[in-house]
Image 1 (cartoon, rainbow, N blue to C red):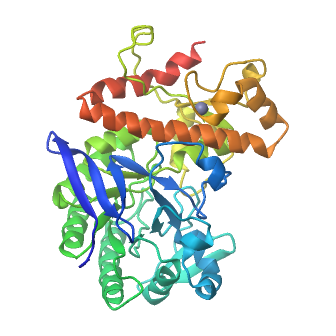
Image 2 (cartoon, rainbow, N blue to C red):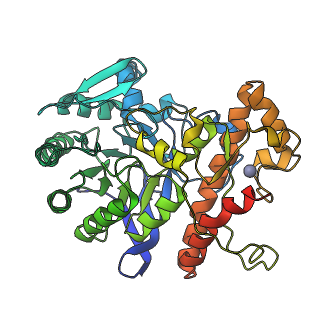
Length: 429
Ligand SMILES: [Zn+2]
């Protein structure tokens, strides 16, 4: 938008597609920045689940952009309007850039409720129907720094018809135009940045049309919607994502929604994606697991080469989990466990006195052992979630730091090999 301060400075573009750089001039005061490829902090209600601000800040190198979701905030509109000072202050946040997305990537979103004029979000109290007017009124009460424009994203089911996909693209563009008009006429939203939403389901032509048309609008960045884990296989996601990023301007960030698994993240970075949501470590925490995959690519002879590289093989359970991720999401479902984590509920950890991950500097790994976390989990202590969330958050964001280092040093292939074989090493023990 006119007057926007956000600026994407790319330091490297590899093979015309993989982008390394910094988003500068973020927030109302413009003093924040965010490195790309990067990840937003997942804070569905303004804080990272399980963690207070103090606990969170025992971790370093966290992103300065937090993602809140309208689905969780919408039911509190009246309270926020009465409060007047915006969601950031309401949630006790001060030093973060706030991005407001429509849906919670870790929560189920029933389909069948979009109309020409409305989309629905689902909070704890049920469904809330949003018109553009209500959507924009909500943004004014939230006062984010960035927000995702209202979009019809109901295309992720595999049998979605071409007609439905076309309609979702048309409606999303119509919603965007209406949002932009309201935005430009709003004093409260001056300097706030809008992310246009690229839809198009699994149809290549519709994806390209959506990207081109959205790019014609005065948006500050792009959300790639309808490509989330569970909606399609990875090969198709990469094909569509690559086609979309080709159509988008170089100087604006691309945020991919609903993709969080490390292997998928790496592929999508190669397809030109800059930003991801960090709901994955939360899902891992909720099933009592700890991220343990390796992303260490430092030339340490003792670690490197100790085990032969193995190709990641997804077991059937993982695939089954993926398929139902959006429609029937069960956070405690162990069948959704991926090969990047260890299950601390497993009896084998009851007398394992090692930290969750050797060499991890997080509070949990510095102070506690796997056996203790196992004990907390089997006795249903809330502290288990706190400790796991600390570690999983640290581990996941550490992965993104390693990813940028790998890009800066031409070592993406090495990182990919390390990430894909990491947990395999662990399981052999
Ligand atoms: Zn740790």
